[in-house]
Length: 357
Image 1: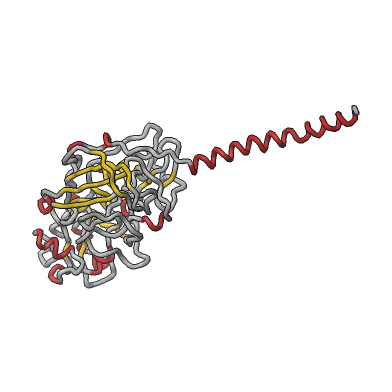
Image 2: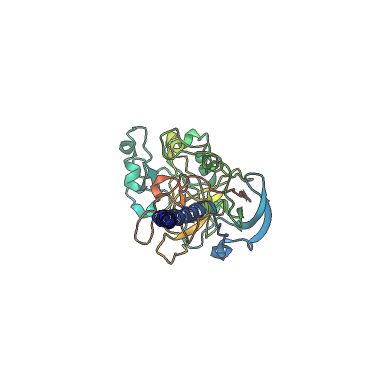
């Protein structure tokens, strides 16, 4: 009997560490799994928005989301006019003008200054002798009126504006009202992220994107508003973040539609909007050195700059350019300014956007 008891105790003592190890690691694995699946969505904070960019107070309304369900949303009405920076310039007037007279152009993942020299050397830059956007006296062909802007920016570009630098001025969109409906609390989408990607230019900005292989391409489906536009999100100044600019179509018509140094330009249908984040808009600094927050995507998840305080890029981003951390939960990091893509897709169910005069 004593021998049997001794053997039992010995067996228990031998396997006890294994039971303890398995038990502790089971708890550890469970907590890791929970952190990935049991998301605690952080509500949108309306206090982050600059009051000067709003045309009326932010309110809560029930609104239908992209999947057909109804949710409580913030209704945010803006004028598409930034209050913390000036808009433009976009196109230089002369081939001798410096970078301060023009904006930027995105090509091959880089942002180039659109100065006079850039315009002068476009034929060699694109290896196409058809490019010649300037005259014998050095002056550059630039759209000067609203009618010219619209004729040069429409899908079927007016042949008269071949080899023109296209710029639309703030005065062309005075009185424009933009309305965003964004979920108060983000709701994870049940659909595949690729099926809810921000895509395409706003109406009048050119048709959906360049051919495969061009980084300016457009993919997937995005929330569409009454103005026919598509939007990625909203900056804290009330200006919308847009999907990739259709750079291939713009170039195919031998036109150029630069962004200003803030990453934005004007479309007469939806107003001033950003295709890139260049650090010129309001930021909400993070206390832990994380990249600053710059706005919200149309699904209510936060949008953050690319680089943190140590100029390091985030790691572990998914195909939407999002990831988790314990402070911010799921959130996006925008792509580089020259990449012509702010985020890759939507994690959650999106609200809607309209633009009207």
